[in-house]
Length: 95
Image (tube, rainbow, N blue to C red; front, side, top):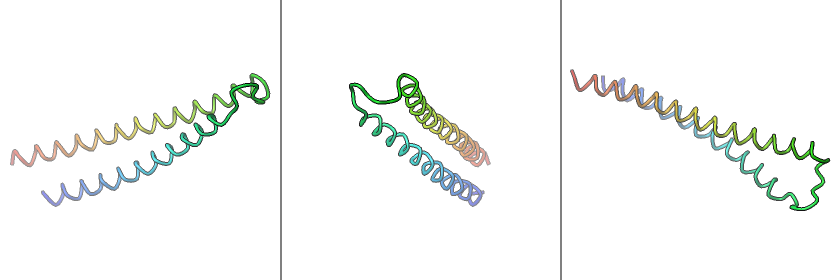
């Protein structure tokens, strides 16, 4: 039984490492987008008018939303895996 739990924990660990890499990549994209926005001039930016400004803002919002959704998915996956591990641990204690 302990071997099964060890294998499960190893698989969970690998899955979490992959999710962490994905979230780090998304974080880097959001940071880069924030740097680009920060470099925009405060006065008289040439963004092709209001429509250009709206398009740029929309892209930044999409990046932030994607990053937050990634964090939420990661948190859900972590909660599911920990629930399974706790059930296995409780089942082992009862035996």
